[in-house]
Image 1 (cartoon, rainbow, N blue to C red):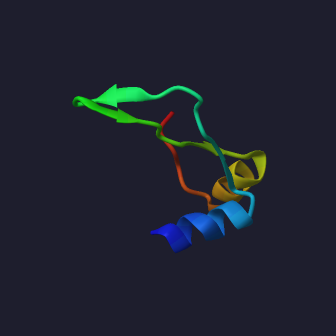
Image 2 (cartoon, rainbow, N blue to C red; image 1 turned 120 degrees about the horizontal axis):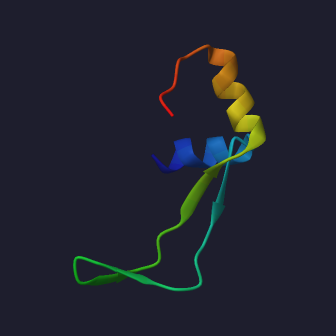
Length: 54
């Protein structure tokens, strides 16, 4: 999974943001990374011709 995420990041299809604050999920403190689809990633998905529910 890590290799896949790294390849997608290298292709500039997604970007990530590390939060400054932590959140509590089921009693555990976590700092989850947020993944964002870039314009290049959106263009790639659109080029596949797959219908998406918005």
